[in-house]
Amino acid sequence: MLNSVENLKEPSNGKVTLQKSPLQSTLSLIRSLLFDPSYFWYTAGLLFFSEVFLNFLIIKYVAYTEIDWRAYMQEVSGYLQGERDYTKINGDTGPLVYPAGFLYVYSALYYITSGGLDVRTGQYIFAALYLFTLLIVFGIYSKSEQLRPYVLITICLSKRLHSIYALRLFNDTVAMAFIYVCIFCMINQRWKLACVFYSLGLSIKMNVLLFFPAFGLLVFKSVGAWKTLFNLLLIISIQVTIALPFLLNNPYSYFSRAFEFSRTFIYKWTVNWKFLDPDTFISEGLAKFLIAGHIWVLVAFLFGRWCRAENGVFAVLKNGFVPHLRSLEKVHSITPDHVTTLMLSSNFIGIVFSRTLHYQFYSWYFHGLPFLLWHCTKIPILSRLMLIATIEYCWNVYPATTESSTLLLFCHFIILAGLWSGEAEVNVGFDDGFTLRLPNV
Image (tube, rainbow, N blue to C red):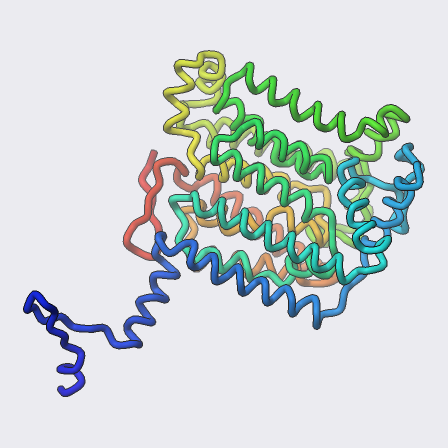
């Protein structure tokens, strides 16, 4: 009774109010940090500074693992010594198979790290890249009307992703940083700048092409047919400018290496197809099946999901050539949720039908997994969390097994089905409960 009286306070207006105990205040703050959208950046800030500390500890106490860094430096060394024929630039892992932007970025790293010998400095650079990417991803998530702050926690829990950045220094992470900046520009309606960053990402690694179906569609929806053509020319011109020293020497050599679509992958490193035998894995039949599946699912999403707000693909085409109609539709359809969902979905469809996934490829889609899952509105929240945990488990099984590959593919198809069956991502709001229920559009 005495404690209850002590919690009463009489303000100047004469009314008695009940004061919260320290425990109640703490629980209220935790609840707000987890569920209140207005606390989004407080939660993001806490996670960010936790990641600064965690990355420092990882670099200091976890052993660096040599996989591709030495080969990267050898390839860069050949370029810096004057070689401009792509077929003659090689490393321990084989010929150079990345576009020219890769050489420029890793040439800078070559000088900063004393020819690649100062690996620790390289690790800190990639830890900084991890933190920069995390901030951009937080910025993308902050624009969504469908995500509560607790979702951000799932982005920071991946053992494999920390390893890919801070312990292995893969070029995939550089390409993805450009792509997330591109998406951030898109949700802020900065389309020319988005095209610049898209092309820069493509100049690092060609997996960025997986985003292109949605990227092209969104640019067309937003700026119309003729400006889309200009933006495509901008992307191409950046690619040509970056590759010019190699194109002037031997253009066939450059394109056959930097954008090699017929490459044969090594069965040992596949994460997603270990339940197949090696002969089936490298077979032309599997390659054709995956390409056909990829195209079929993209077309299905294009006609069945991505253009619903505009009443279908043909309405989008019509609006693209009629500026007045496009300006009316744009207000309702080109929302941050719509942009991000389409970009991440396009990439994810490519992941599902990828000829192979190596361990570093996890960085291609991990940051977008929570976003996609929280747009799978028919999947319960607990199941979404379980899917994230299961996928993380699969990526941490080394070497991959029949069971881990099968489980990973199963999780991918659940998410793909969830994206197909979920509600539209436009005109979305929070509800008062833990489970978000969206209105039909």
